[in-house]
Length: 370
Image 1: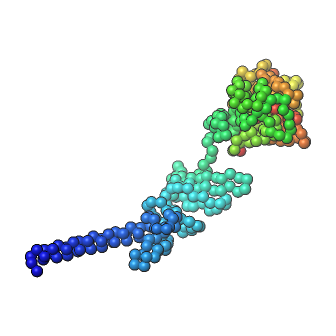
Image 2: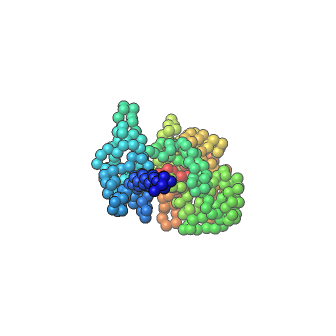
Image 3: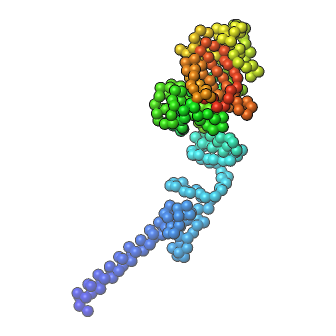
């Protein structure tokens, strides 16, 4: 064997040794990668990965994560899990109605708890907060405080809101208009929507009118029942009376009063007893109207921010009437098979008219928060 051949053999051995070392290191790194639960295993979805792969047996080890929650990265935990220790950190936890709330303390500060509402009830949302006395408690997260504008998600119309007593009202007539018909279309069962002075079926044209922008939509009673957005509703006869009674008490008139309950009908109610339908100096009918609406004792002072406008109404004979002189509001309370209770504010009246009318009429709607 000459010297040249010896060099070739030695070189070849070095190459083989180097390749072997590199391959061994690669296998070790590969094992580390495959054992990492954050790396997808072949043929497994991310939601199934809970372990790694045993390089010796080529079997997947899915028990490696038992009792363990990954501290970094995303992890999907399927099925029902019971946590026996303290839950630390923030996030959202949901539970069925009546479920036990998690612990609220310094370690769970900021944790949000969503309790499912039972049938017919809304969910309730709570947040773990530190109180002023340095204790911790779950606090109910309410809707935005009354007084902030509400944006109707159905059409992006914006409504001011006002707190009156323990009620939160929209301070503007609802203007939800999914369709429109002329005043000659009449029904006590099919929902119909009208815009004062408009005789047509083009929603865009109806919305372009000044009456729509100013006064909103007139609804027959079936349409009024579903006119308010989620979280709001058409007030009942009793809820209207709660508003009237609060306004009368807020006015605190020094004068003798007409009664103000759901036992009376027509004009002589909820105002100073003047011996006339008009009422006296003070009355709920005066204080529910916006400033500039009405005349005489009925001239609006908008004392509680309800800001009613004299929007008129639609008659069953196919005509519009009363804009600038009266406004009619539906309640959700039926009266017999074809009528429903309502309220009327008249231009020269400080009283509030209460009666029932045919469901086919077109009246305004004010929404009350649930």
